[in-house]
Length: 348
Image (tube, rainbow, N blue to C red; front, top):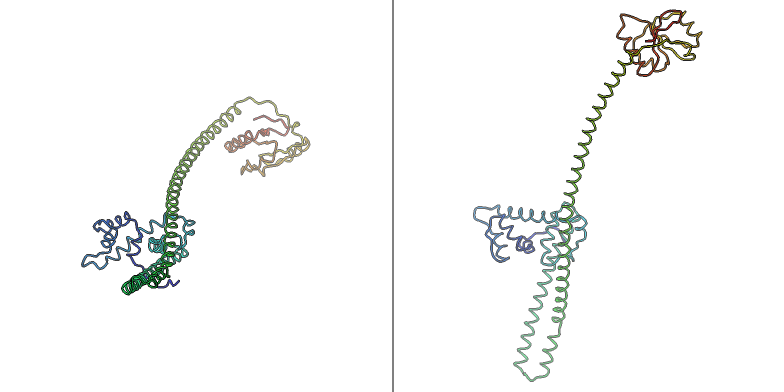
């Protein structure tokens, strides 16, 4: 089948449109609405004087209408088509419609369908020409025989042989082809109608699912906002509770502090290094860790490895001492002031 340099005929393409489709095309092209299909097609292809671009607009509207139709088909539905499945009267329209697809395979199928329609038309024309020629031959022979002798039996047999000739067989074959083509066309039309209905239902369901998904997302976002707000309130309450506990802890009376109970423990000391204190603590079984000459940097990190905190009161570092005591209370670490060498400890 030769498909190069195809000349697409708008008349043949428009014959495949429904009457309603042709009327809609006429309205878009601002043509008069005629009564018959042929008149509508002639009106669509007519052109006012002084407007040479009329066919450009006609092709634009035809293409727009056919692209709209092809968008209603799924990719799977398009691949099911073949040239034999398309009704003869719609082959030019359907074939040209498929050539507008962005898919190269579908375009090739469209060219095949269009060319198949042209070949079928040519075959039908040849069959009709043969039929006319044979009918004329029959008429001439019949007239000649009748004129010669109506009662001539041989002439009668000759007429009957002509009537049962190839023409009769070709007509019968052609009738069968037309009947099958009509049946296939009806089945294909039913399939197309069902595909259109299914496509509309799927699009509707997709829109509904999208709407429901968006509603769920909005609910989740709302819950997340509410949870974030509640977390902020909880954090504020925790901070207030910690502050209340700290204040109450400072206000509680303290008893005596016995170093001997912390034997084998590590003690972090915020004070100048004192050898006598170091020896006494070691003798009690306490491991002294001096904060490098009252090192106030990063007390939180230093306290993380100790079980006891001792400090020397310093009026110039009151703020730092408060910080150290607050950290020790938060971690529940005993924190006391180192009073004198005798080892008497005053609880904070």
